[in-house]
Length: 175
Image: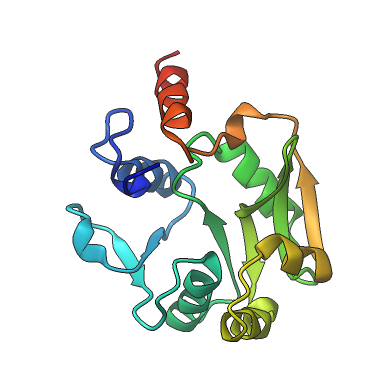
């Protein structure tokens, strides 16, 4: 993208992070923003900072989340996937069971590792991945007891990786 996606303006919000926070706060009683340094944000939120690792990989963030929240599971969504809505999230929650290691969305494009529920049973695997500098979430999910939930909506999983994706998202938001 060439700049910090989390800080891009989106909709009626000053940043994509605020947009996601606002949307998710309507679904969950507690919403946290995982980041390296919360000083880059100029709005109030609950932050989970990963100050231990230099890696920007989700594995490092997931370790920090489990360590700081001491939770059995959490829902994770990427900041740059603004169209994943309540219907998708609620289906993932409904389909999640204690015996799974994760419950993850699968779009027409494939596995969406940053849209799903991660269980504490994965914590030692995240530790090992971090130690080995291995960060392929999809590989881990395929090796563990992961429940994949298929969705037909391709637009919902639009990921803002390039400037053209961002422009497309702004157009979709207007329509």
